[in-house]
Image 1: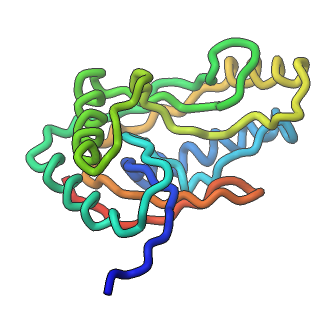
Image 2 (image 1 turned 180 degrees about the vertical axis):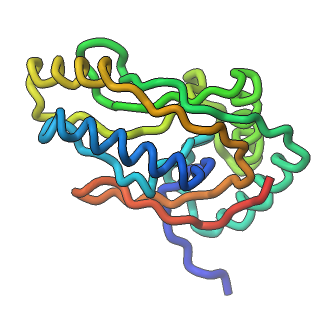
Length: 195
């Protein structure tokens, strides 16, 4: 008898080290004081570097996805990553997402993204049509925010600076489940692979 399947919302990502999470929590706290009601901030504990968003996923595919991730990330040359400034999507005066940039050699980061894409290609996922832009989402601007408030978001993000913290070499790739709630997305691990 086949176990019942459930549709999960999933993605493949790198979990952050504690020091980065603490520093990003401080940055969120600083920005939230300047923007008390315009942005829905993410929980710092849930911040991650997404390599591949999968979306609706049959729960029976979780073990094969993890096996494929392990195979595709075996003997990976993992880059040293660093935080590289704050910004918004879209860039400019109509922001919807506030992010912290991640750098570590564009080619190395692209390689991690391609490995995640290769891992799930044979399981039915296609390659992303947009270029990979490594970032850590800190908050989402609320829909009801007017143009003046959006300008204030843009200005606050433009003035803010990330603290200088040590670089980080990832050692884990994780398959996450995302559950959307009125308070924002809630993330949990479905399994991980050491790299």
